[in-house]
Length: 355
Image (tube, rainbow, N blue to C red; front, side):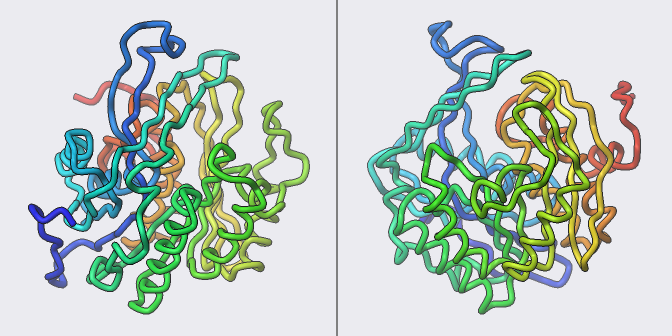
């Protein structure tokens, strides 16, 4: 583990809740602006990855936020650790070792040209991690919430087993567990995802997904929606949330609802299904700056709102507003504060300058 920063296990009743996330952080190499990959000889280097993005958002919101992963002992691995520390994320549980860090290349789309994401993560330190490298009872000590996405178990059978062990330890310690399905067809097949995530979802309390994940992983589709044509009826997703709840016993199901008018303009909102009822956020018309990390910022907003005790309507409004703001910011990380999210969630959509 990263010995130069101890895991803070001593908490007082006044401390904010502690959230632990588990996954892979990648070096992101992006084409400048809206150029195509390698149109320019220069690429912009930052870091990002589903669970790391959630951890950064929660740290920005003032929670104790810990990110668990495995990174190589080299300059790139250390730069990734430093980027997380600089944003307030606890890094003491990061395992060090392995040959390399995973990469992804991003070309941002515009108008009718779609964004493109290319992975170069085979053989990465995290993909080669073994279950015994993670002492979950210790790593989860003092935690209120554990979060992972479907990307993590897609890295390979040993990582999926580590994810299962984390969920089991969380349940044993009374820690709430959330799973963002986050299906990636470039990492595994639908059949593999169905089998592995079907088992892991049995251990989760909260399910988060986008408008296509439940269809792709579990075959649960909303009638009347054609996402490639931008046709989406939010009300039909109540049936999707209800079926997920019936299958896995989730206490809450949250679904992001993105209507893609083009690569530059989206309608964005969400629903939270709990207690047999769906609660919908307002819908935002987004002029996209960077949509990567939008779902992660939604998950972080939901986790934050539920941990502070918001009721369902307020929680889904906070989550949708947090993710709407993120998509106006370049990079994976959501660099907004609670007051900024609350201003938007309470109806100030004007974007007027704040003086």
